[in-house]
Image: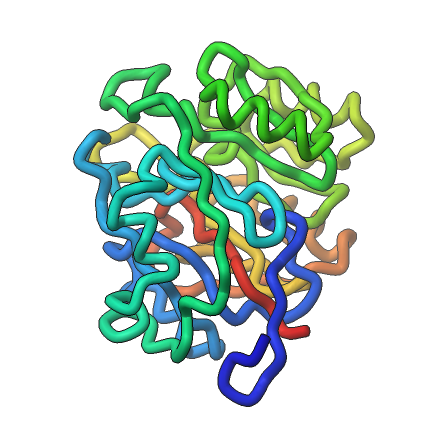
Length: 270
């Protein structure tokens, strides 16, 4: 498909672009702060969920799952906040992308209605990494579970309900997390894991946020952090780990790193 003068394609493997990312999905609250247009990236903003606590209401990883290529799932699939993915209103008011309706996103609807309390707030918080689906089975929406099975994802069961929030995806074979259970589970599946100290990620209203919610890929070899990481006690280890994986990094702001519920890459250069 055409996007301006460039041919674009859907990112097939969630969280893992091969080329430069050109279109993302993010909580609209964070678009002005992140200023992704500096990198030639258009952003579709999704409004805050009325069903979640205010500090995480704009976290996209609580509301939408990118399953594969153009297939997404959300509890809001029949409501305007997900129809914004392909609606003219979004094209005009948010990302100014011509013919956005031609993207042909397929948005499936989950059964669980999001609620402020755990575990219902985590019903869609699954980490997809290559052919692995990492989640807490006590939290996961049944429709989402069935879709993961139909797409032949291999389940990796963990106790952490916020699996996506908890993991910074470096590449298909390497991640960073402060969660001991996830670190052990992914290591058993051949994933290289850098386990770091918890904390040091800003999330107003909570003691800490998660590094997975404060990072996302801009291309196969570039990782973006929402803010500066120098205050983290494991920053030198993180830098060394990224060098080993041949992934560079950048800070999107000069603020201390903060949790935005990650950003979902949707389209990349063909």
